[in-house]
Length: 298
Image 1 (cartoon, rainbow, N blue to C red):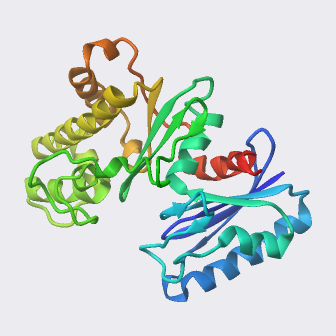
Image 2 (image 1 turned 45 degrees about the horizontal axis):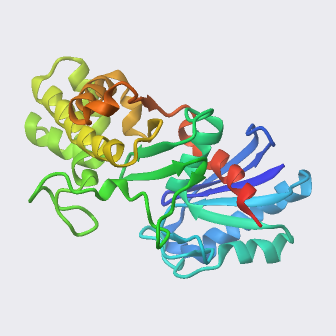
């Protein structure tokens, strides 16, 4: 049995995961940003103790919602919760439970979960996009997570799409995230429909009802996202691209025009083999991937 931990900006979860990826038990709590990393680690340890006492745990895997130096096994920082800078989280877990532990950023871990237990099962290469409040991603090549020279490969949300486009949280303009994340869709929908404060879900709902402004925003989103995905396919030629995250839950209203956009934009040599699929493991991909990640412990 593996102890899997998913640490996000607004919540964290702890799960016992079987050898075949089944979630035997899951606990979740809301993040207290004011409490910082110290509070959150205390909460994680409190829950984890109960799991270690109850189940025969062999190892601990963590998906963290922020940059991680995988080669050093250290958290870089968190933009949501203070106190994580250069933190040795696996070391804390090892000292507490005398168990091997490993951490990676949640996008890589989510990609691994989908690859091993979800839509990518049976393939050799896959690119995973998670589209929600932001846009992240993970790249799997020959069955392994590709991390690049400095461990930060897969920043798919920061592929530049639109010159002088909207400002991204990274400080640049026209990034894929600034155009296709949930908040970006909501902002564009609010402007087009002249209705302040719309969410991405409300824009998709309006598009299903035939509201022209909303339909245009959804089509633009599919085209922009298609540009990012086509760039990835032309560069890496993966077996498939998997789309997860809250925005992907919009379903066919987004995915149908997205697939058309990708087909229009990829090189002809890739058209017959392009597969763009919805994630199958949803919110559980990170927990399942954290369990799979423990197979990388030396």
